[in-house]
Length: 187
Image 1: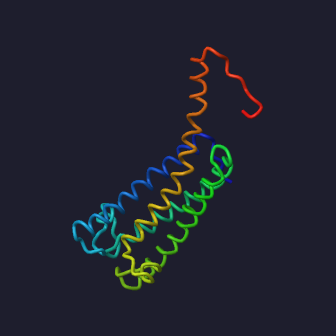
Image 2: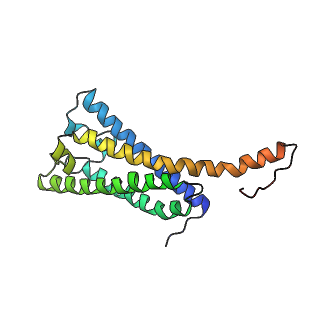
Image 3: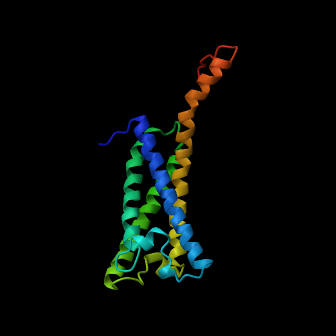
């Protein structure tokens, strides 16, 4: 079993936040390409999609990225659970488990279906399950998948960040306080 020490856990978690943040920006760029610049949806590849194409589509890039992101989320489950209920409240961990891990797992199923269609069609059109069923454009749907999973990871990350600064803040207050800080039964 992989065991994170405090600094390795934080570094890994921060890296996941950074990389997924860039991924969300890529999806915002795709939305701008489609809805502002008028680029046809199948040609709106973000920025990296124009560099990393296979069979004329960026879907293989998305599959690899989302598989890595899902793996990272699974690696975060145990260290975050160990930090529940302090510093990560139960509701924040549940938000992570459902909004990030469960939704990203579904998102991965969507990408497997998309890749299957891309291979069958030798490129796109390559609809996923929900965009084919609802008519929601793929660009919009996958932006929301990524934005929601990112927001669900931001929630526990916020508590982890605040917990990292807590001991330093207490130490600073203790040094500057004319009164000694006492431990209480609840603290």
